[in-house]
Every structure is written in structure tokens, then in C-alpha cells.
Image (cartoon, rainbow, N blue to C red; front, top):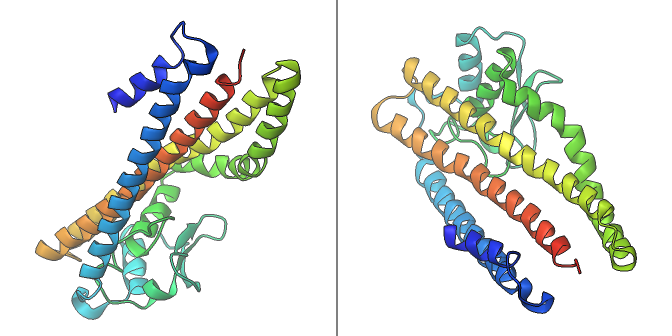
Length: 261
């Protein structure tokens, strides 16, 4: 990783002509994207393997995902959150506006260890993990509150950033004014910041899920280890997403710097 960033830096701190100044930086960016892509593929492949492996392991007592969620909320003295059913796959989420833990088709009535413990690959998911978010909300967990405040800003900036950068590049080509370009980069930076803030939120929700599964003796021994493995691999998908967001931000920074002079 240090080699990659050395390549990125070398493209700018050099006296070489403009035509060759960014060759090293471009190579570094290319290598960085490949590395993140490979890591993402490995994490997703391993995650799918773990989920498939444990999806057939029955949950102790034959509880469904919805019943496990209700039990976790009660044990944490949360009585104002409802467990509801939503259609689709990987649509599980906690909604602080409606105070509901929404479980998808594959999770709501499932009786497997994985369904009782795993979060989804692209969004917050399944009972114990989602209840972890409900507990965060009830306790005023700061990163969750900050992420919630950023949601409308991220929704706007993610839609408009590319348009702003494209217009900014047109202006840059004719006037050498970079301001609009950097505004667009800042908008992309907000999305990267959102992904970074998401990391502690998701990891903490998984930690809360595991802590409850262990303290309540809901899972023990090998099954607790299976839940921990599933949660750990699922949480790593958020790490890959954060790395990808940072790489995207870095790409546009390099692109704008490359159009100077």
C-alpha cells in the first residue's frame, strides 16, 4: 500500500514535463483500484461461502428471525420499536423515523443461525444486527446520529456531484478556474465521509449483536463462533465500500490536478 501512495505522490513532486508528470500517479491509481477490486471480490466470495455454510444450521429452540429480534429488544428494555416484514432480498433495515426493524423475506421467518446473526452485504441487515442499530438509537450513539444527519446531504451530493464536476472541467478548460471542480470533489468527499462514518456504526451494531447473543446464552460454543464469523465477514464489506469511496475521491482529485498547466 505504501508503494501505491509513493507512486501517487511521485506524479506531482517532480520537475518532469506535464505530459509525463502524471504517469506515475495514474499507474498508482490504477493499481489502487485493482487492489480494492480484488479485496472486494475476496470478501464477497468469502461472505457468500460463510452464509451458505451456516444457512442450514438450525437456530436453538427453533426461533425465527422475527422472534429473535423481539427477544433482543425486550432484553434491552426497548419497547417502542416494532418488528415488521418487508419484501425483497437484503432489504432489512432499522428505520428511526417509524421506529421499526424491517426484516426481509429470507430473514423474517428463517430459523437458521445465519439469519439470526448476519448483516447484509450492501446495507444494514437481519435481526440482531438491526436491533443493534435500534439500541444505538435509543442510547444516542453519536456516529449513528451523525450518519443520519448526513443522509439528506449525501442523497443530494451523490446525484449532483458528477454534473458539477463535468461543468467545472468545461470551465477549467477555458478559464483555468478550478473552483467548481473542487466543489464537485467536495460533494464526492461527503459520500466518502459517509462511508467512513458508517464503519464504526456497522461494527458497533455487530458487536452489540454478538454481546447479546453471548450474554443471553442465545448462542453458545460453536454456534456463537459461527455467528461471529458471519458478522465479521459481513462487516468487512463496509470496509471495502469505504476504501472504494476514498479511491473514487482520490481519482477525481488526481483528474483535476492532471488538467492544470
